[in-house]
Image 1 (spheres, rainbow, N blue to C red):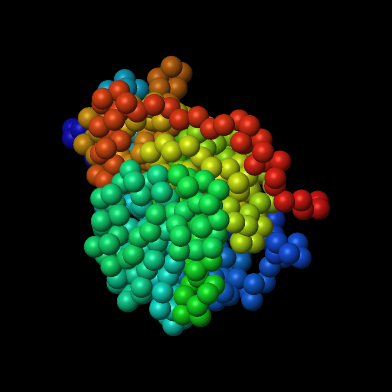
Image 2 (cartoon, rainbow, N blue to C red; image 1 turned 60 degrees about the vertical axis):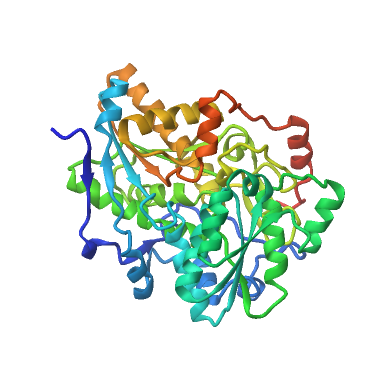
Length: 454
């Protein structure tokens, strides 16, 4: 028997629709509020930031939303993405569990992010937009939007969190290769960035600050829109192609997961793998356990408060109800930059409140340890973000070993770590340490949440 099994769908079986979990939820998600009036926002409130078709997807309750043919044509460069069974990892762990992983690192950008970047670029080009402005942490999202912008003829400008800008120069080089302009955030190119630097000249940055800078630029020109790589409903929608493909591939293997695991920062790759399975259960099908794995240094689901908050540090965005550490919270500079966000996607947070998923948090070093074990058995070096999902899957497999349970575990390997090798070098040199947030800073950030009447 092969020590690694690969499940591939024929190109003709690539999903033609994205799945919208809002159609199946037992209770609707709380409304998005205007920060000035505290009333639900309407399409006109969001129009300065997004084209109308994306705004329509943001509020849609249709179960299926068709993937436009031009988007599917681009997807074919790497989709359907493979599903593997990790025989070697199973043997190394001595577990009776079957471990499957959906591998999104086969995309041109090396992660799951092009699933939404391509869609957003398409809808913006269709609306006549000429320039997209965004933020990025580790750089996977910035890389993906740079790639998509090149395909659809859009200028792309990116604010990259300073600590990641310094840690990951090669990711920045890839963005520039695709034609994007990348600036360290906080920067002196925006009023908000300058205000942060005046108070803290060596500020490491955060996704919340980078979002504020991008939004500030986006609203200044009519030919410019803002693009976000996670958190928002339409972003999570686009990522569900991951779970939809995985469902068909597991059926090819005559399997169905008992546990679905994904790493969580803003929620996009997690929703991509988990939402189709949650929806299947809500419609009367089998209900696997859904496990969200987040970094212990930025634990929005496990330590955050479920409350209305701003999505950015500069308080320019609408208010959304989510698990949040407070928009003024700055996470420490651990290497999984894509997970360094103060809040969790409102739909993921809502599912957590409804009891549809579990959440756990792990430290940086133990996640890298899991990633190295995975690489030495499966041959793929995971991104630091993906290491959290690997850790979660290994924990579940070892639980099955203790309990003697032959469960089926599925996790999303959302990207490779080819541009993160400096972090692995530090791990092997014993220089990688667990980062810890300041409890006092967290308390202050939570105390500063906006006051919204019940």
